[in-house]
Image 1: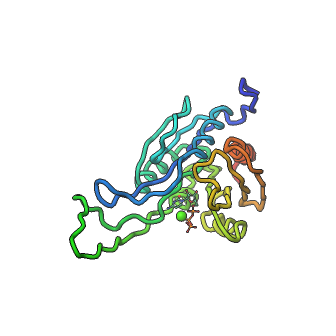
Image 2: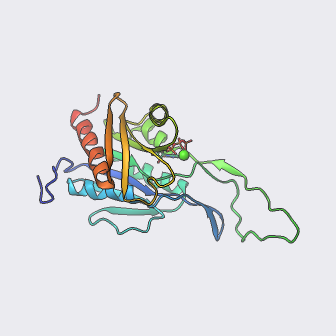
Image 3: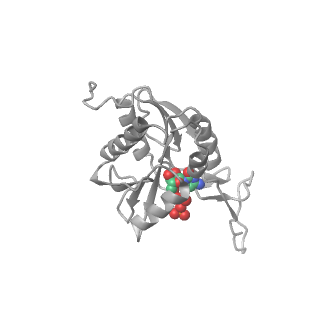
Length: 229
Ligand code: CTP
Ligand code: CA
């Protein structure tokens, strides 16, 4: 145990974490975005550092203090996030996608500011799909035994949706949050269940994002110790 009192079970491990939310520009002054603040991803980075890991934090549009000792790569859009993640994942032991990635981006970017015209309806905004970064990293597994973790915010049948998503993304662990009006976004606290590809189900009681982060690292450390199947 280190000075922090936490197990130093991630010493020498290279870990890549995405945090925040992507912004997809429409024109030089406007974008499509989401409400993710990056708090969960930053909590993951702080706790991994405390447990001895080497951390690369790919931060999309966050306004949070940089955790001491982390390598921070700043990105804006989903395409930039993908490039940074794929590059960093190349020699990572574990990859955690905590960022909220826009599913779509405007099909065209207007180099000039979009202007309104008197008496005219606005043009509809045509969208196009962004690549699925988590699915891509899971499929590629840049290193043997690399552990890949996703996050999902769900409503309605939360667990069934989570199981289906875990299978679709082919990651090792999926942290599923139930979202509602006052839950999760911008909040310091979280409640979740972590689903494992091995069928495991680890509930995390409502509490600070740090405790959820520590549960994620417990599960990742176990899988790293187990080694590739
Ligand atoms: N994700 C990703 N690339 C995308 C979309 C999502 O890497 N283009 C990642 C997120 O970072 C997260 C996980 O996939 O770790 C689940 O995101 P979510 O939005 O719940 O999944 P989607 O497949 O986009 O499903 P939905 O239609 O429910 O939004
Ligand atoms: Ca999505």
